[in-house]
Image 1 (cartoon, rainbow, N blue to C red):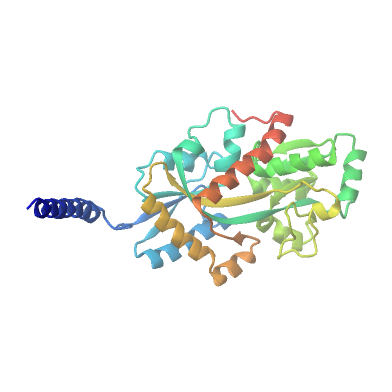
Image 2 (image 1 turned 90 degrees about the vertical axis):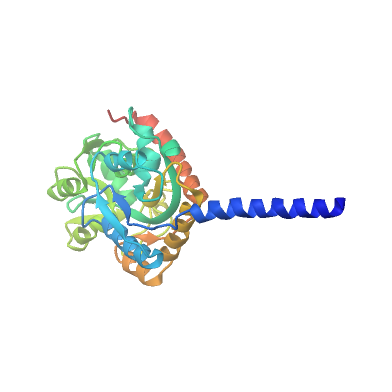
Length: 328
């Protein structure tokens, strides 16, 4: 009798647990069940916008709901980052972040309206854009060694352009300045286009730029590529050696992009997004298309993205401190 009662109680308990968990599972809506917004912190038509739109197309197909790109440029990605940081953490508003958004901005801005570590949940890397160091066509230097000698001969009057104070492209030039031990004048512009235009015109003599931006001007002979600050040469510019190959080990800088969600986004949503993004970034056709722009695609786990952001911060912190780089 006692044994029978115990059996009945166990069966009832099992039924209750099954019912409770089954109901909770049934109450969870499938993700996604309506359109998802991908917020891009750059203008329409640029390489990151193009990447985001192709990712959106792939996710729309593989996840069965529309992924829509919304461009929110401004403030060195801060406008878009702040918007997503305040969004509901349900997986329907995502941020196409850059290394500036997650690793550099917290180091250079005295007041930042978001905290990358607290306000975002990492999802996956998207890709990496190598940089290139270019000089005005009239600068009498064909390689890094000759450029260093020329800069030193100018006695502090050599000027380099950037797309804004505290931007990763600015920091790349400062990293070269540190490793080379040269004295240069920084001239910040409001964007990569005017910075590159100033080098072409000779108002400044050098800049570090995203390779895809400068490639047409390099091919046209309006600027000269001196070196690639990356671990290996760029596939679209194979004749230009890396900075390390030219004796500048440590001058390694690139800009990477990733997808993050508002903090508190459910793990099942993050896992689903990460799986589909990694699959899209591994597509050979997509990789080939972006290789032509100099962008190397590759997904990641959330932990790998977090580690990459920490590595980026550790690299730039001493450079920023040395030159007292701060943005109000």
